[in-house]
Amino acid sequence: LGGSRLAFAQAARPQSAGAAGPHRVIIDTDPGVDDAFALLLAMRSPELKIEGITPVAGNVPLELTLPNALRMVEIANRPDIPVAVGARAPLMRRLVTATYAHGENGLGGAVFPEPKLKPIAESAAVFIRRIVRKYPGEVTVITLGPQTNLATALASDPELAGMIKGVTMMGGSLSGGNVTPAAEFNVYVDPEASRMVFQSGIPVTMVGLDVTRKTALTDAHVKILETAGTAVSLAAAKIARNDIDLNRRQGNSSGPNMHDSLALASFLDPSLLTWKDYYVDVETQGELTAGETLGYRPSESGLRGSAPTLAGTKTSVMLRDKFTPNAKVAVDVNSARFFDLLIGRLAGKA
Ligand code: RIB
Ligand code: CA
Image (cartoon, rainbow, N blue to C red):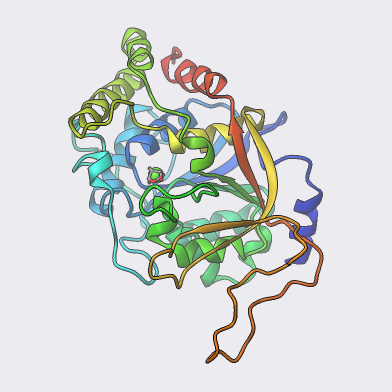
């Protein structure tokens, strides 16, 4: 895997759709209000060849994220995109959901008809493995929820990591969490899965709370979507209206952050963000801090672990080798340009 990591270290910019296209992606998601926006944006982005969508349990249970994903595919009129059912629970923990933020149905409470579309027979992990092996070196996995499906695929096939072009993830934070002071929701739900991804050698592009906190949806954005009057824009407006109202009932004056849409948009146009190389690792043992993503920069100490306990036999992981980043982390964002892209494409004519 050193090869792919070395190649990444030399990469000028994070994984992106770039100039040539279309670019093959698999979108792993737990819709989810901001996931729904990200899915609609992706399905209205000609740069992407969406090989498939893989729902996972997260914001709400799989019984809801699966039909919500199918609903978005139907609304975008993209029945050409296969949907493969993912995990209903994290690798080693009980599922913690975020219905407080996404409503009981995961779409802010906005009600849509039951989807007619059905998922394919393959599980998400089997689908990810098959598509990556079909197009080695060409597929970017864009994860917008807990990374259980991707980790399961990696665990099933030791060669798979070396065949994945990159992972673009909404997740993590170098500036404190949103579920606990330490952890961002996606990594909080399945820290073991995220640790596997960061340690896999696959080039990771991390779009965390550091930047997604600056992407609150406003009433003005919703009005543009309502005025556009297309199936996609009206569905997005309906979800947003409901979720903004939910936010307000909970005393939040600002609208929902478009976390996942920013991660998707960063793949379409990395210049929306400012990037820094980090070695990122994930805390999985901390009783208070499991799910924390720690970003290491070149430092004189080279210490990565805690001080050794008196009872402990091994000392903390001392790093004598040179600083080798495993992730490009977004550290700033041009929010105005991001919303121009997001709202512009969702309001665009078919
Ligand atoms: O912390 C934000 C992330 O958690 C987003 O992906 C949102 O959809 C929730 O899953
Ligand atoms: Ca999500």
